[in-house]
Length: 469
Image (cartoon, rainbow, N blue to C red; front, side, top):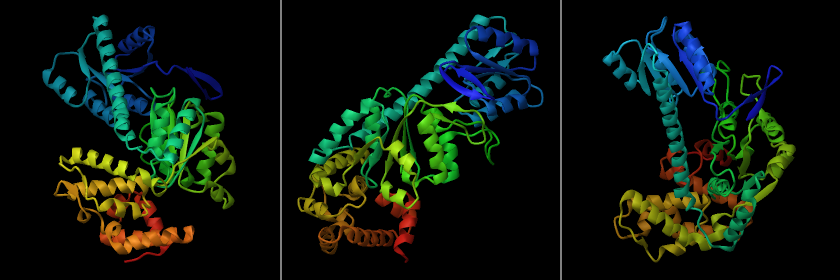
């Protein structure tokens, strides 16, 4: 059971209780079916015409709708299509007074789960159809979740390495994962923070529940707030239906907030409240809802420096920073480079149906000299590109980007290793970004995809370094 406050009253809601809406212009039929299925343990509601059904559906959550085809003001097929637009996952059973094959076929084509003919004499049959539709919906929901976990299993193998720093990180993850405590992952872009968050989730007692990831730096603030907390119908332009946020969707599971340092002070206040009380309100709503989620956050910023500059709340920092895990840069775990290269070659030769066995023996030294500012993500992009371009059994220098293999860039990378770190990092980033942008003829989207950073972050870096064509 979960509880929330509504108009000052504490309301209890069972997470497993299914909600059904009966739509029929016959009030007696609605009352009969509502009473019948309430006895079976369902939460019931009724609507007597099409617009009322759409309005109720847009303001509430329903698992199944029993929808009459012949309705006043708006026919059942129109209602069906509108409900499907509002929620593609809802199960809908059409009810018709006669066996009109054309109408039934059109209903199924428009997304109806099944149909039943009226009048309702055989309630046992109706129960069976509804139960089957709910079971099918549950299977679809479970399949979507299992597919996401299978995707995780295929991606988790990219957390590869046996360098001392990675082995120590694995030991820490194994310790903290079962504790259900709040974790902050600290590491540069492309080091694999999301994969590590997924690994923590998989090793926790919440592994059978959802893992939801949100990139706080990749979503505009107004959209991020409604994504996190959900919104009520009419809360803003385009809010056609009450919609759950990820705090509700992740209830019982894990919520990963990547790049939390990019959030605004106003949003940080709301996040702090959720962390402190586990309660929140939808955008435009007054109900106080509860959510039992485990929080894992990540940042590539120095949050203590952000606190000093008044960009990040100190109280929120201490809430998210119960346990910190620091993820090394690829340059700090260069011993893992051969393992990662071979892994990505195997991955993309299978994906692109190529017969590539390895790389030219002269290349490992060049790869090791390169600074890898985009870390493992950049390495993966480079190897995928090389596999796609390679026309031989082994990857050659011509298959790699010029900025990695040319002696000038190798010398530059060696130079920055012995320079002042902060200045060298800035200088390298400026030159690296300029070379990538020129390579892609200043196509920002392609350049951002190549180096594995969000497009808006690349715009900010271009402005920061004063780069121009």
